[in-house]
Image (cartoon, rainbow, N blue to C red; front, side):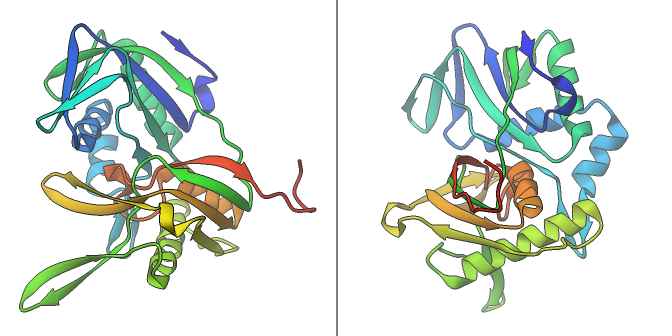
Length: 261
């Protein structure tokens, strides 16, 4: 088992190995969500994170995001069968949460993904530079929605990145996360998210605890205050981040004269 620079890790690739096959539902964010919480051995911290998180008004943010499992696999009858090894990316703004997760992974003989036993092969730090204007790619669907009442029933409307409300709500959500986590508003509240090519956007529907969520995959330009962008890189962009949505990777930078090479 290997790990690099354990002290300051906020994003890591976690790899597991196992005997035979690892069979999970196509929509398996819920299983990884369970693995994350079960790895927090400090009960008080776990309960506080799960039940309260970082509060902003009546909203609560958990401060983490994660990807799907990746590896050699086949799909049949709504299930994915993985061959060893598999990995996923975990990202957070909380050094304490990352320490809790890594400590458990290193000290336990095995952990459970659903009802299946796996062993940790490695935990590798992921470092990505953040600037004020970046080309990014979503590893998990980015989603933004509004709820409303229609004929006495609660309805949910999921926005498309081509709608102006999508970008406005994404920016507002990021600012709320910043203030909830740091306790003060961001000095510079600028954040814009723009599809590079609207024709290449892919709509994705997935489920989490029986809730249907609609999101989008694709490449975007993300611009704004680097401190704000760093936070959403750590915790996810948009809604449902702690359910796995909104995790992105940096593909490149659009340098300006004021930015260091």
